[in-house]
Image (cartoon, rainbow over all chains, first blue to last red; front, side, top):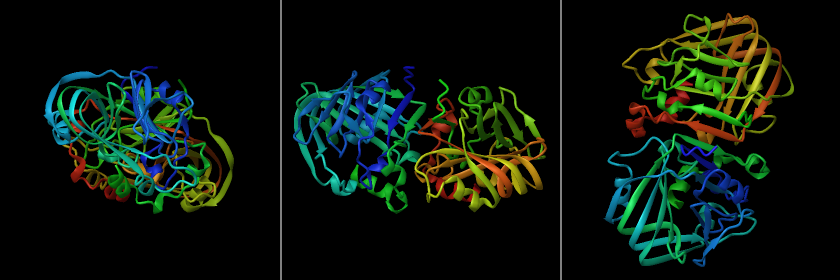
Length: 236
Length: 236
């Protein structure tokens, strides 16, 4: 069952846009589909990163909390780690990182994940403040976020790349979360500078897209009036 | 392994648009993921329909051929049948059928399949003529198609519904293939009138989207210049 070619995703980024922020899967279920992943909690409760089977939440106070199996999420993905180290990277900004991760191609037509482990001379992250019912739209909810900055931090950046065709299901291009080695800093990355790090890649051949079909609010929502692609490009 | 909540899809409709028509999976592999399905052969070689584990190809001469396990396809989907009959339908055109299949909702946010078994007072189908390398675009290739019409035909219409968010991966809305009970008529439906039939529905919670990552032409293609959504809406 541990097929490392599969990227499992619960929910879509699109459903966050109109504010469908109800938790519709549990961390226990997400971990059954992988030991590595990212996501967010109900009400956009922090930025999640799963490394080596341990799920962490960076909350809007900047704390990294280890999550229990009953933690619920509207949107998250996971996979079983089987990375191949492709080299080291140094003195790199996000554009440099993306170039290395794409290994010379202008883009990719399949999903893949990248891990960078090393020292970052600069890391800027955000964590959204958990909102409560009735949930507002993604654009409104995401305004209420904490921004964190740190210099010279050691840690792991976990990145997922989605092909342009699937923009809306996920965010097209790279989506990166970070966790410091000392677990005192992390979040959804907004900007960074890698001093030196190893780069490892894992390519998938399958997206296992799971939808919250038991959630009446999701199933009954009319997405035709939400400007999904535009809002996602702005919010992420 | 036979999870009837999963819709398996190999390839995307998008990759047909620029003419990536190489067969990248086999019927044997497709049948491992389901006993029911639709698709097309390499070079858009006919319209495929799998019913009760038997794969048929309606070719451009109008013949229904039973396919072998080594038949190759660029794009196809399958699932394990577990339909629930929701009622009968009579005197129904495509709009009436869609209304019944959506059970009163304006649209659906998840994938589902519909089977209509009965008598059709009118059925109009098409089957694309197989093209050879170098493959032209979908718009060019699809011009070369046979149109078939039949009155008072008994058979099965197999339909798949894809949510708007996944337009490009599949075609948003309904996509229907037909096979007559006598196996002498079928294809991709263009128009129909149901005299009387039973309607059965199977809802999925997962799209298992498999991509042809070993195909260099696909992996190296730059889709950014293909007007995927528009071309698909016109061709399908």
